Every structure is written in C-alpha cells, then in structure tokens.
Image (tube, rainbow, N blue to C red; front, top):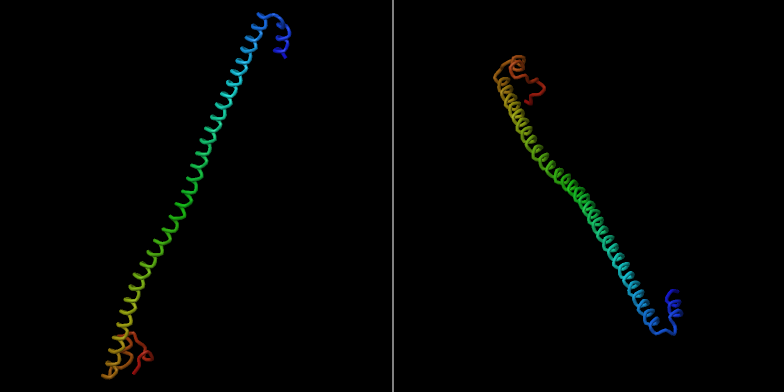
Length: 144
C-alpha cells in the first residue's frame, strides 16, 4: 500500500516523516470526502427511487380506485335502474289493470242490461228472432 511505502521512505528523517504524516492525513481526508460523496450520491439515488416508487404507487392506486369506482357506479346504476323499472312497470300494470277492469265491467254491465231487456221483451210477447236481431243475444245465452 502507498502509505506503508511512504513511511518506509521517510523513516529516520523528521521533516520527511512530518511530510509523510501530512500526506497520509490529506489522503485519508480525501478518502473520507470521497466516501461522503459516494454516500451522498447513494442517498440521493435512494431518495429518487423512493420518489418514483411513490409516484408509481399513487398512479397505480388512483387507477385502481378509479376502476373500482366505475365498476361500483355501474353496478349501482343498474340496481337503481332495475328498481325504477320495476316501480314503473308495477305502476303501468296497475293502470292497465284498472283500465281493463273498467272496460270489462262496462262490457259485463252492458251485456247484463241487454239480457234484462231481452228477457223483458220475451215476457212481453216479442218474438225471439226480433229480440236477437236487436240485442245480438242468442236464445241459449238467456237464462229465463
């Protein structure tokens, strides 16, 4: 090693030993400075790696959260749509049922009235062919 060689060459000469110690000290300081510089650079690099990892992590987390949010939103939208569709369907079904019920009630009421009139006509001696022509009710449909 260079330091050992320097000590051997300066051995016995006080001035040369003094110079050798100074050179050795300067060399060690430079070496320490170099180590410090290396440590600084490594720390700098480690910090950059952490920063990039954080940025990547943030992006991945954001993308994953956004994806899950969209999926959840679609699911909720479908569920709400189905609920509203069922409500509307029931509402429309009830309206249609009421309309049909009223229509059938009117038809049954009209038929019942026609039958009553036909029966009264028969009781009053009007021939059946005339009654059928007027009321459109067949004789077998009349209960006497």
